[in-house]
Length: 126
Image 1 (cartoon, rainbow, N blue to C red):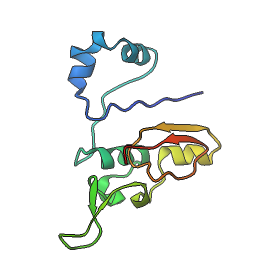
Image 2: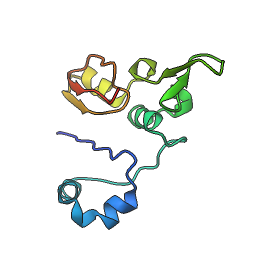
Image 3: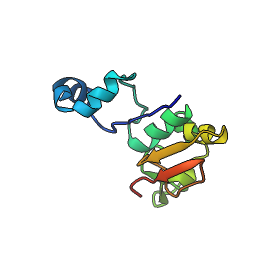
């Protein structure tokens, strides 16, 4: 059995699945041939914590980051990028890879710097 997860980051569901549905034949074909649905995001609904929350089952507080920039310390000046190095949780692809399943990731946030998996990664925008 194979699974494909396509995340439409920041896409407004009403626009994609109602207003533009007829203008997106490839997406419509994939959706009609499988399962799809609108997911509620995290709080805050920002790319970095949302993707890691979805793929780990942990909320941003448990993950320890809330956006692209994260505090390194308790000062107002100590900021760092919330890249893959700050993720201390097992995400879905880590578990699948550990179980011997082949994984392919393309453009998933917080995958840079790349960590070894059973498969291949085209990292995120960092």
